[in-house]
Image 1: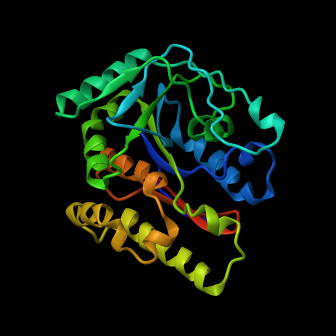
Image 2: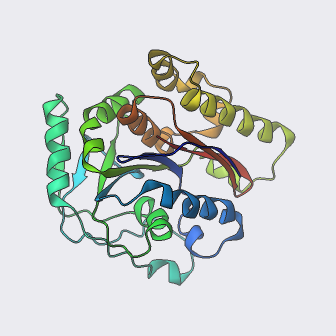
Length: 271
């Protein structure tokens, strides 16, 4: 695992690769590097007053925000040990923050919705149980939009820039490599090369200070043109939380983390 480091102040934005279902919480050896990363990066983030998670596991017709006071957990994975359906993460909701997010989106011409019925899915509680095990920081989730348009998700992020002034930690919870079949197929030189080529493109795109912001945004919008893009992301749901993060941050990532999950190269980005 390697990284490029700078100190980070308030209002951090983090895109992370959250691993396979609940496996990071079950002692899975193939998630060792990811767990080490999350434990390493948490102290750098300071003490956020609240956490907003954009999860790859929630899509709606329009961006939707959880507004419940005490959201339950959604065990949105299948075929895992019984203990994985008894995981607890009783973080409080943040109705006032949810309302602010809703207002920011509406004020930028983005139709949005609030829901006090939906709970927190594993895109939130798996990484946060590692990062903030006391579950005492108020959390809200923001959905992706079913269109899966990269430009739309960058625009959503741009509408939420104001959150950085309020000591809110924004987490895009996805996976920089998300080809489920590939996780269970024997790796070959060709598939490893494709995984590495896309990772390098993504690292360059998110962190190179040689790129103008208009060029960085253009690359992210046209991500399908990247090497092996559709091999690494047959469906882009796990990549698009990154686009929201970039929309909020609007700059090159301050830190890049490279690691392995389930024998695949993956990365995380901190602004």
